[in-house]
Length: 143
Image (cartoon, helix red, strand yellow):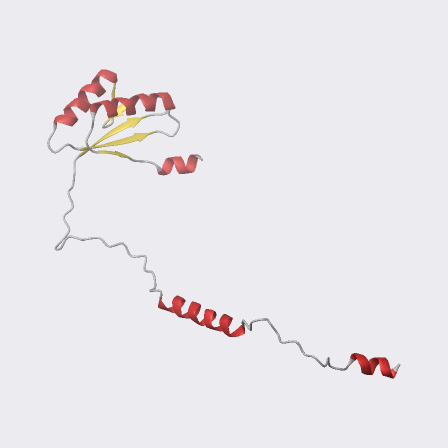
C-alpha cells in the first residue's frame, strides 16, 4: 500500500511543456489602461450656455384682459358677462391693438369642457398674439 502512494506521488520522467499563455500581465496592463482612460475623461458640467444681456433688466408691464368661463357656463370679459358675438368683437379689437395686451384665460374647474373648448377655438381663430392661462393651481386641488 505504501508503494501505491509512493508511485502516485512521483513526477513523470518526461515533463511536457505548458502551452498556455500567462494572461495575468495582460489583464494588469488592460486594467491600468482602463483606469488611465477613466481619469483622462473630462468632468461633465451640466451648465447651459446662455448669452445674457448686459445692463439692468427691463420688464415690460403689459396691459391684460381676463377672459373667464364660470361653472355655470357664462363667459366673462374683465368681469362682465358677454355672448359669442361680443367675444368675437372684443378679440378682433384686441388683435388690432399695438402693442396687443395679454389675454389671460381662466376657466373654472367645474366649467363644462365643451364651453371652454368653444371659447378657446374662438380665441385661436382670432389669432391673439399674447395668451396665457391663469388659475392652474385650482386644477391641482381638483385632482
